[in-house]
Image (spheres, rainbow, N blue to C red):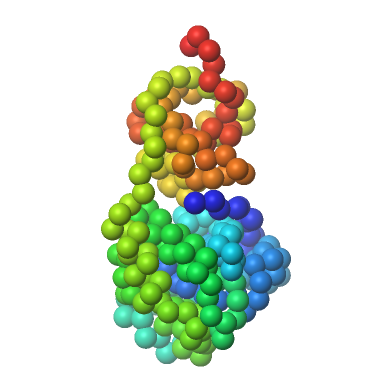
Length: 246
């Protein structure tokens, strides 16, 4: 799944001991481009982890291990898993969707959202059901977000269908060695920058690998990831080509 990193200053580093337990669905009431501008503006004071456009393009603003500012206000909540005296921002992941509350979702928007939800649920061991995939209005009843045109049951069913058949990677077993061109993040057990960080290797260091996959997370047009002896992954775009003879 191709995800473009945008980044937002509006966040808290870490989650103060909490972890993601649910996904909150939002509507942008605008465009993906406008949301990029709004979330990168420090004065806006708001953010979400992801934004998805009508064509299925996905942007990321905040890392999943950090707290975004998307669902902190609680008004007459109906969500039964809400924690008392704790901001939902600490234990949820927020996804914004392009459009308005009275605009039907495109197939591409549904498909991209379902795919992202499935990845998040699998990554954080979140149950893929309506108790854990919720609309913003279930936390803040003075809003109708994400609107009446989105079928949340359909969205959850689509994500759950994918969840029941998790993706496999076309792993090619062929050991080798590369050199890091910049600092490289080693990701836990999955070829995606959203997977938990194991460690960071400084630029100019040699890294050995056991093989690779060519269908990991697509970063800047490159979905090639190496797998190390511990089963963790690092992105090939941050390394040299394999060093011959080593």
